[in-house]
Amino acid sequence: MKAIFRCDATSDIGFGHLSRCIALAEAFRLCAVGSIFAGLFDPGARDQIAAAGFDRIDLAAPVNSGTEMGDDNGSFVVIDSYRVNETYLAGLKAGGHATVVIDDFKALSAYPCDVVLNFTWEAQALGYPEGPLLLLGPEYFPARRRLVELRPDSMARDRRGPIRNLLIAIGGSDPKRIAERLIRILRERNADMCLWVVAADDADLGSGLADFAPGSRVLPRQPDLSEQLVWADACITGGGLIKYESAFMGVPAAAISQNEGQAGESRALSGAGLVFDLGLADERSDEELASALDRFFANRVLRHGLAGRMQEAFPPDPSAHAARAIVEAVRR
Image (cartoon, rainbow, N blue to C red; front, side, top):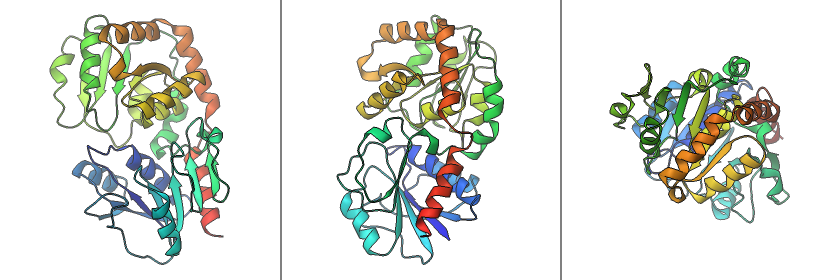
């Protein structure tokens, strides 16, 4: 049996879809299921797929554009894209493909597929229609293997003291230049911290780190953030996948969202005690953002509470839990 992952990853689309698909593909290996990736990928995405040890099919256009992979007997399809609609899913099902949809917001009125995986905090409250197997909530979070392996080390870290090591990881792309803005704000009031800033390979942020503690540096886009999260006393993330990775690793995180969808999800995670919500980037002045960061940095009780809640919210290996459930469902 083989899984065909249909997702795309470019600077315009983002890289969160690919990252969580790779995490699930790694977990499928534990079930003796192989995987291949088919999609529109930029060079950095191709490197990530190769580094994880998977083959790929390069397609000329994104999901649901009429350019799709061919039939492959004995396979099932895993789709992760906001371009998916009911017609697209119905067409795959009519072609005899067992189909898994990785979803976030329940944007569709119907899900003609075999499995829906939505690991977000509010997934169970979204009211999915009956039919497919529903894998809902953080117990099915697709964590990369290295995150799973290093989680005990990260959970064992004592992060109750002052923040000395701060990780800034906005996401696979940062079109609003949030990282640059954060560096400017932090330089004026938190220059004693050591900053690791994960950014696109061409991001010119290094000169802004000269005034911070020794060891501060810009890191290129990473295959995963496992070692960086173990290192960090706290993290500032965008509103996407990394806030879940931080929570899984028990790292107190403040999330600044790039769009309304992320903002709503960050509010939900904040209400659950899993993240400190900095709000929507476009709606926060530098002064407001600086004030919110001051509260996050100064409140050790808050950060310790976040770390404790994070440990309770996720099982030790949620991606393996999801993979086993999917394989059982598509084999029926």
